[in-house]
Each structure stands twice: as structure tokens, then as C-alpha cells.
Length: 428
Ligand SMILES: [Mn+2]
Image (tube, rainbow, N blue to C red):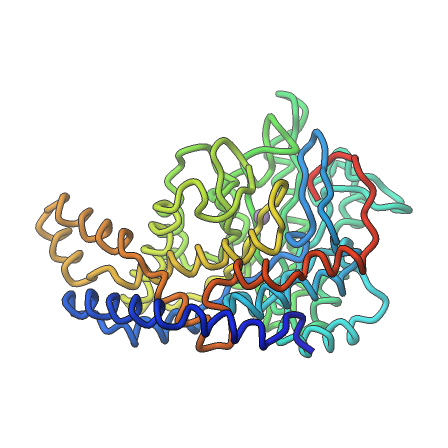
């Protein structure tokens, strides 16, 4: 059964139908004057999906505190139900990305069945060797895959192999590896040896990868190691992915770079090298803020998609995985994830509106202003009526957040799910 009453969605869409039809027709007319077929764009946008991170439906926190929300998911089945709400109303998030051990359960086939019943599938598996779990024999305090002690490295490798096995049971096709390994003091760690140990450990994981799987290496400039991280940027990630083999690729988390780094340029480089794994979308002002995608710098998000659409337009064969990776500290996570998925979808739609032939010509002629205006024209086009149509056609809500608030879902799960413990620090 769908978590939100379908009659409620239908009634909501009926009330918005007349305004929506007028807005959609106006957008179609605008684009037609530019030689763009709105229906062709609509079909591409309808086929686009971004994965929900299972941890995103819980309330996040900072190193200072976490303020729990109402009706937070208690386990992976509750998380799946919240993801089903997001997909039912927004229709842009057909997959869920799990995190082990946070999403452990006793019966993976039951979980796979529950996902299928909700119309969901599983995206990349995420391992965790950046925190210790209860009963764990060896600590990751001083590292995991790159630890100076071979026994710790072996434990971290074994955990990743288990994530692959769980993923196989769930129908996943990728493993994302992010490590917190690094150092807090100059001199603490031998840079070259730590990287060699990373290669040695990840080679063992890569060797266990099913033939139809990919391994996503996620870099991050700092945190929790604040002097140096072992896989700190796309360069280290690229070196490692190249050393491992063709099924190892580099995952770009938008928040994992120094402020003002040109992320779309990194994306272009990785596409050209055949090493772009995909994305963790979020937004930031200062560091790895994990704010909602496109909430601070929507033009940057658009420029990333501009590179992706350009490459696809030019016939480059690549298959980026799209996932949100955010922390929702002050909003209802379901609302943030619906809005963020729509924002990612919006950036994709806007990038599809760029006049590629005109842009090619402007670049060839060194007409900088014409070139940048072509991008701005696409970015400044309000494609909301298009997103509304895609959602409505798929059975979702024209305005997912309004429909969600009208459904009373949060209050309902607030009664069904006992409140979590207050306090406690740390990002979850
Ligand atoms: Mn990430």
C-alpha cells in the first residue's frame, strides 16, 4: 500500500490543474521560439532519477548536538517507508542508497521485497570504516584501510567485502568507499606509505567486486582528519581508481572540496578520463556543510549538469550515478529530500535547454559574452511547469511539499514511532 492516500494526491492535482496547464503551455511556447521541443525535454527529464541516502531521512546533527525530529525512522524499514513517501510524491527518486552498519537487518530478502513493494530499488552500498561499532575488535581511531596495523586494515577490508555481499542480496551494483583516514598533525602520517596501504587494501576489495559492479572512490579534502586526508582530492582519487582498474571510478561529493573550487571542471576532467563514478549532491557555504542541493549555489549545480549534458550530447559513453548526500538539521528530512531531488532534476532540465550548436559556435569564435549568455538563458528559464508535469504524469504531486503537509504523514509516524533520545552529538 502506498504511504500517502492517492485520492489526496489526485484532489491536490485537480485543484492545481488549470494553473499548471496554462504555465506548461506558456513554457512550451517560450521554448518553441528557441527551437526546443518541450515534449522531447520532458521525456528526458522523466527518465532521470537521483538516489536517496537512507541516512538522509533521519534528522542530522553537528559535532555540537543533534536535535531529533518527530517520528524519526527507527530502523531501515522505517527509512524505506519515508523514502517511499518521497518517491510517491516527487517521482524523481526511484532508488535508495544504504549504509552499513546503520541499515543492518536480519533478513535482506525481506528488505528487498519491501523495497520492491514500494516501487524502490537499491543504489550503491556505502561502507563505514570511519567510526567504531559496538563489539568491534579493533578501532578505527587512527585509520582503517590505511591504518599502520595490518590487522586493522584487514578488518576494514572484510567490512567492505560484507557490504558487497549484502548489496548482492539487494540487487545493488556498486560500492562507495569513503574513509576518514588521514592525520591531524604534520609528521603524524607518512603520506606515501599511507597511500600505498590504501591501494593495497582497496585492491583486495576490488578483487572481490562482482563483474557487473563498480567501485566508487569518494575523496574529501578534510574532516575528520584536519591536517591531511589520504584521498583528499580528485587527483588522489584518480590515481587510485587508475591503479585499481576500469571498474573503479571517482565519486564527486559537491561538499568535499575547498571553497570556490571549480567542481564542474573536475567533472569535465573525470568524464574525459572515463573515471566519473557519479555524485553526492548537496550544497555548502563554507565546507562540507551538507546543506540542501542547490539551496546556496544553484548555478554551480547547473554548471555541473551542463558538463554532463554536453558530454552526453557529444556521444561520450558514461554512466554517472546520482545520489543526494545531505544532513537535515532544521527541516523535515522528507521535505528537504523532495525539494533537493527536484532541484537536481531542475538543473538537469535547464542544462538540456542550452543551445549546444550556438555554444559551440560562440566558443569557436571566442565570443565569451555570447557563450556565457547561452548558459544564463538556460539557467534562468523557469522549468517548474515541466517538473510539475513529469511528477503528475507519473502519479506524483504537482506540489509535493504542499501535498505532503496536507497528508499529515509526519504527525502519523510521530504517533507510530516513539521519539528518539534527545541530545548526543555527531552527524548521523
Ligand atoms: Mn558523500
